[in-house]
Length: 227
Image (cartoon, rainbow, N blue to C red; front, side):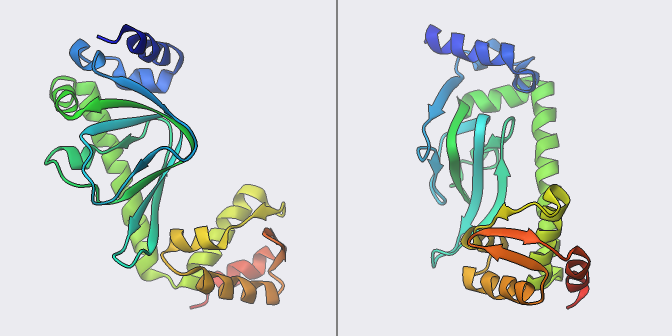
């Protein structure tokens, strides 16, 4: 056994309540096979269509989940942070990853081999309940996202993005990355830029370089209702 690694894992459990709640009934044979890994910015990467024989729990940092088409187009699915899982769906039947996972900055994970993960899931009711609850939440969010993508126009989806930003920041400036927003919406940056320019020309947005200010929130709401 790697006692140094075990000490680091126990230290994480002692200081972080959320991670402790996941592991509180974890069998000892699973805990001793749990590895703490720290990744520098740009290091954490799990490729779509590749198989990884590990179960990952995010302890620190954030990862983004993308689906990549055969033509290289990326579509953003979600961001995962502390307490989120990676790989649980693929491990059951040893499937290749159906998406790409990229760390945003430094990332710290707890990693468990497939056999230990399946044993933990079978023997620990607390853990199996946590996994089920997390999967249900992710499915709920994904269905909401799918509904928006199907039922709303691109213009409405971009307006909804700015409405959500206004709820967070009001009329304070915020930075926008057109290409990143295009990936989140599954469209090209050019399509996003065209709609943002239209909102700017209508006096709804003020844009200085990459900084955006929402100056006419009421008109933004009206634009969101138009088809």
